[in-house]
Image (tube, rainbow, N blue to C red):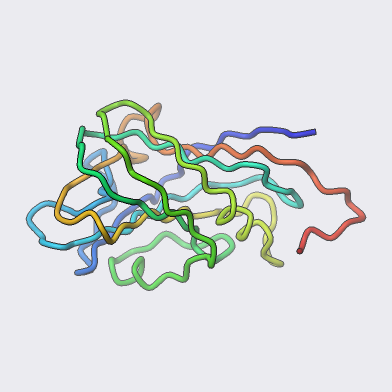
Length: 186
């Protein structure tokens, strides 16, 4: 039987560009594509979620993000997870940019960003890869990382943890539990 859980982003969400400029979301938003005034500053955005699940098969995992402002330039966003169980919040741009990412990544068309209208991206494989880690336990942090390298110098922002609580990032996981006598590593 498939179950569903929706988890809101924790505090600690942040972003960094290729120049290691760093932002913690305190103005109410996070950059997911370029920060203004810095050419070719492609951004990585780090979104932490405390996941209570253990020993599950992910049927679908969806990241829901809400744009802080509108934008219509096209391109692809890449969605990975940090390849770690319960990672600490990055404290600098170099720290975030040096994090190891899952081997699975979902490259998805960004589409138009309309302010305050939620966008949904399916990221099953990166989430399952982290939940399959041998050191994974329920209650650990799973960090979703959004990045891009093709869109150019166009700014896009999403609501941060410090912004509107109803619009911060959410992770929806549809899953089935594995029997207790069955290994969840495959």
